[in-house]
Length: 557
Image (cartoon, rainbow, N blue to C red; front, side, top):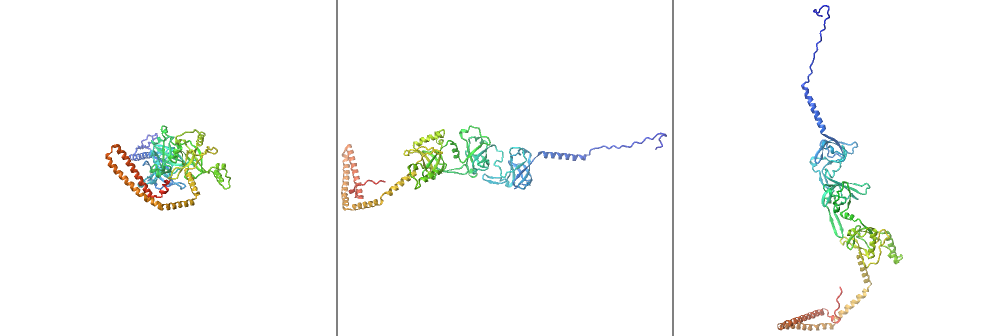
């Protein structure tokens, strides 16, 4: 307590001192704050500009390296491989790739990926650029829902870009030489290619997916016809040897051609996915156009070697159909064999009712000759019945001497026996006549039989005796003397003719025109007489026996 405090008052306490400190931000903290802000901005920019991560499954990772292999579309880099790892079951490889943000919208269910490497195929050489840059993963955008997992293709697709055009489907019984990339032609111009193929559900055919580039896809109508134009088409028929190929590419890699009939050119183009039948050849297309077919059968009694399915059926040289089938009728064969057994009864009716075992089925197509004679089978068969009663018959003919190909000809034979169109079988039967070759063979055989029946030894003996008698006569003195006596007479006639010519020349100057004409005619007659005598002399010198026997008739050729 202080001495200055008054007595009796409580001393006042002394207040404690308060120290106030002023807080201020140091300048040194500005630098890390700015750095943090920049890092956050960079992170945001990086994350916002980075594309999605996808996974692609491949059979193996040949040529693929993490951090190096790129993903390209139209030769533009759109992504980079980040990881390469094995699947859990060790059967394939899963590649993780970071894609560009710009391409993110194209990553859909049907987007395709493949490893681009140098390849040599029937379609040509591709991927040569990877010899220097190394393999890369190619991409082709597709449709569907957005996706991040994909299965890579073992081989690149035919279309590696978004080409404009239309896809169609062709139905064929077999694939043949058609494959992915096979060209498609329209009037010899390549307008598309085959994309792929697959078996149909019932496994009895093949569906081929094709792509026609714009604007040629507008040429395809619902009535268009497609046919296989692969390789070389070599056909041998009555017209000779025919060789046809669409192009060198079709020869190597197969090909397809199509055409659109003129009457369908005004129709709307076919829609995408429309199916068309694929014919074996262009001739198959033409054959399919003949929809009206009336079927008949013909029995032949001779060999049908050279007659095959598809051979022509003609009427007086005009093709009106094709051979549908060539076979042996089992029942007819049994009846034929039975009728020719040694102990079989040889009745006339039995033999005439026995059909020949070889039966040929033909299709008559009136459109081939521009004819439409019947609306249905009943009317067509009625017309054929009238023609058969008018001696229309079927005959086996040679369609080509070069190849030996045979055909069936329908024609009228006035000498044929009366017959009717048989309607008791599955198809009406047209009666037949033997072929020309068979008829010639029968005539030749008959001539040989007549020669064999002739008494040749007796004829040879008589001919030998006749020759001997003639030789004796020619060497006789009478014939030799007669030939010698004719020589002076001929010489005298020759001198007379020469004197007459000399006299006529002298008198020509003293004659008037009318007398000169008559004398000229007389001179010509004398000349002809002299020539005839000269010919007679030459003949007698060579054939003196003619003085006795006379001149024989000329020998027949």
